[in-house]
Amino acid sequence: MRLSLLVSVLCLVAWVPISKAADSAVSLPQTFDLKAIDDYVAGQVKAKGFVGLSLAIMKDGKIVLAKGYGKSAIKNGTDVSSETLFGAGSVTKQFTCACIFLLAEDGKLSIHDKVAKYFPKLTKASDITLYDLMSHVSGYPDYYPLDFVDRRMAKSIALDKLIEEYAGGKLDFEPGTRWSYSNTGYIILGRVIEKVSGKPFEKFLEERILKTVGLEHSIHEPKPSTKGVSTGHTSFFLGEAEPAKPEAEGWIHAAGGLFTTPSDLVKWDLALMEGKVIKPESYQLMTTGRKLADGRVRNYGCGLGIAQRDGETIIQHSGAVSGFLAFNAMIPRTKSALVLMTNCDHLDAGSLNTELVSLLLKSHAETPEIPTVKGPKPKEAALEFFHQMQAGDIKRDALGEEFSIFMSPERVAEAKDRLKALGEPEKVEVDGVYERGGMEVAVIRFTFKGAKMKGSLYRTPDGKIQQFLLYRS
Image 1 (cartoon, rainbow, N blue to C red):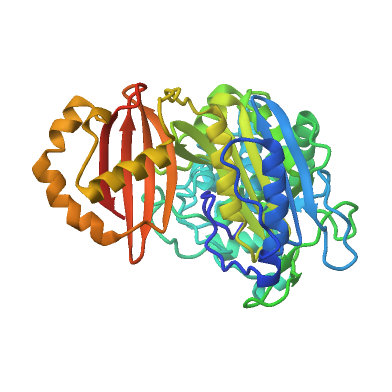
Image 2 (image 1 turned 30 degrees about the horizontal axis):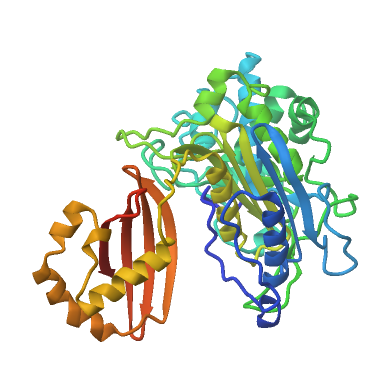
């Protein structure tokens, strides 16, 4: 809902209690190792003070991890399991769009229908289409742009009254000329689904998607007493976590009312990617960036954002309703997905989500084989050559021909005093090793008293140094 963008990073104040942070010594895994990921997430939940968190990872079309951490509530909460429900917030929007596409495929509406067909009295309703609403280019003001439940939302509201109030006045901009996230458009879409289908939105959603896809632990706007639903939490200016005040009836509906589990969401992701929900042409439009009137293209389709990262296309969206955060990312090429949900809206779950998505991407990355090199490991080889440079006496038989010529006696003599002044490094670390041109390439970090340097060490399999350059860092 109020989390308006699809990005995986949340700009929230992250409170990390010192006593808890000190308990976590688990480092972020460097590879896609499920046991290491499990341990890391458990450590983050403890260190950062999450009340509860749930995670599901799908790789190559199969769920490889589905687990809950922490509690469903601070008071009288149970252990979070893979079946504990969390608020999905704006992740709901992709379901709403799929409902619109299903009705279009049934021949009951067109995504290019004008809003005037269903709500003739709204501002510029004859100029705005359902597609404009789905892709956030309508110009209708967003009724939920803030990050707390204000006085309006503490009281229930009729859907049509909300629509009239926020889509019946002045537009933020001319339709199609700009992109601006608007929950208002999705309340209208929900009511269009109800008018066309003759059923409440939650009923249509349940019959056409939840049951069809087999999402057994998903429900739209459950009652507080519904079994298995976690409690949302927040805090005020670094205070202790406390139960969050939910939005009153009518304020989230088709814009963010779904409660579900990460396991159900990755099942949904797979069904969507495999064409089991909507037709290929609908999915194509749903996952294509919206073109504006001036020719610019925004990286947002219909209820879904599109990003390029590490050579992969990622289809993603985040969401938040009072007390909850949710992140859903899918990688169509590999039929992989990652969903993270938490019942704390005051902690930086976005950073954790970004780290885990990076590991999932890394698991499919094509990495050239790093050649085996004779001689010492990169750290020792770099430090030995650095000492030689400090002494002004390099072993040329250990250098490649071109590098030896490049390292002329004049250059070595010139660098000697500068490097000697640095003294012995306090720390030498290998920042990464990769392949280039058949060579082992190592990035070396040197820390001196009052200075930091980065070295690039290139070695061929015979152990000869083909390059070693030093840069200020």
